[in-house]
Length: 195
Image (cartoon, rainbow, N blue to C red; front, side, top):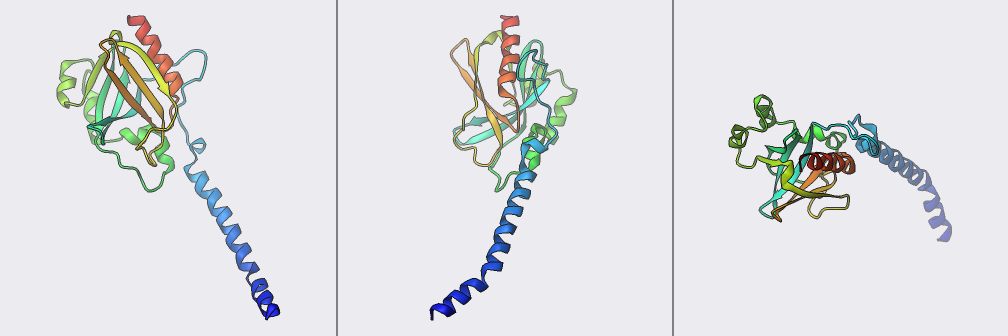
């Protein structure tokens, strides 16, 4: 009886080795597919001179469980948010595209803003969720790289929190792979220059 059990167990070893190798190979390929390092991204320098970032992709929670996706522009006078998409639902699996912030703002709504003066009143009339924040309205900024509850499988790079002089605040979740610290540094420079 013991001999039969041992013989049966030994007959399975090629299958077990094959399955283990297949899982290891598949895992490496899957991780390589979704790895942000494999993607061509525009990276803001970590230290030194902070380059001008014309825009960044961000999401903001609205009415507790809803969210809005913005293409947020940095202009000389203000920070401008153009609503480009509505509800973002956590995907079943991440893809490499999702680490590129362009993925989140490539919508038909985003194309409407190309021909508008972002600092004009007409821009605000395009959608009630659009916003314009003058640099001198911002008291301070904070970058938090930690996890945000409710984001699920949506790839993001932390949160940028804007504290206004009138005690209001706004939290922008940086979608995709972005350099939040350098973005905060650039915004701080613009706030300081206009205060």
